[in-house]
Amino acid sequence: MSNPHNNHYDYTKDVPASAAYPEVSFNPPHDSSNFYSKVKKTTIILSVLTIIELFLGLYIYYLHEGVPSYSWVLFLKGVICILTLAKAYYIVAVFMHLGDEIKNFIMVIVVPLLLFIWFIIAFLQEGNAFKEARNKYDKYQLEMTTDAKKYPAPTAEHEPAKGEMHSEH
Amino acid sequence: MAQNVVSAHNTKWWNGGKSPFNLEYGKLMMWFFLLSDAFTFGAFLISYGTDRFSSNSWPDPNHVFNAFPGAGSANLPLAFVSLMTFILIISSVTMVLAVHAGHNRDKAGVEKWLIWTIIGGLAFLSCQAWEWNHLHHEGAWWGSNPFPNANGTQATTNFTNFFFTITGFHGFHVFSGVIINIVMLLMARANVFAKKGHYLMIEKAGLYWHFVDLVWVFVFLCFYLV
Image (cartoon, rainbow over all chains, first blue to last red; front, side, top):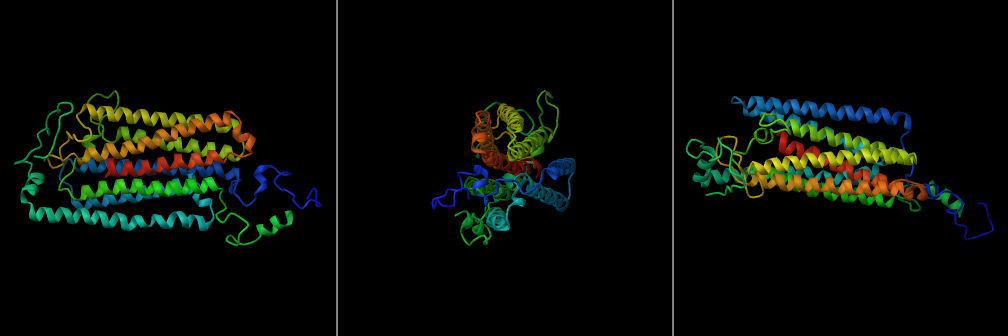
């Protein structure tokens, strides 16, 4: 612009480096005024979710003093998992600014992560199937891991010696 | 030429002439690295879950992780790990503020918040060192599990193997994050970013640091809460 007769005009020379390539997001897409309130809000949300998780965790601990209903504990654990996913969303979307990127890029990151849906279901299902098959065909192992009266853990009631090895017999 | 730049700027994302993701190259690569790292951690945690699902019983985390520094043998389930979780959340917040100061090219702000983030990271690592040391003194290590299953039967060493491997791998990430943040602090001090005219490196370090926090959220879930 400053020298129209020069065919080899290098536009990066007359402008600051940060403005030379304007398509790159050198400048934050959000403005400063709502930035602090957004960070404050997110910090509070993360803290509150963590505290709720802790209370649920302690409640499960309290339930285990007695003999809790299996499905109720499973439900509470499911709630904790959902709260964790909510925390993950806030960390990625706000703290890592993924929510401020263009949609194409959000999809590039989020769509591969959908593999985790299969990953988790398939492998937990596989673990459970292995357990059931093993319980069916290996009665000794089943008794070893479920009958504490017959096979109590040797260290259940006392402090173990340092570095004591516990291999399977 | 200047005219071309302006017209290129008005084309669509994938027509060429502009960055299709509107992201600087290094930042894009950091995201891709973190995506791959997410699968590494995911595979670790899912193998832990698979192993747990294939076991008839498993040690109760509330009976394993119930100690607090200076509290002797008091039974305080979840207390110490909550402290560690909050330390990491707060250090994530200070990192956000460092990145924001970088956006405003505020060198003093970047340095201040980076120092706080480094302190948070070191505090977390110290907590983890204490916890590992404590568990080791109880007889827990790779290949050694003193904790019984929740139903009173003897547990395999899978529990401690997974615990030390996964928290160790995460701790190593925290450690590298602290090193990266220290390097960023020294570079900011040396005016490297001020001369470049932008603080994008702080953003990349910030992405890594937040990712470490993100992973901890899931480690916290899998080992301590459920």
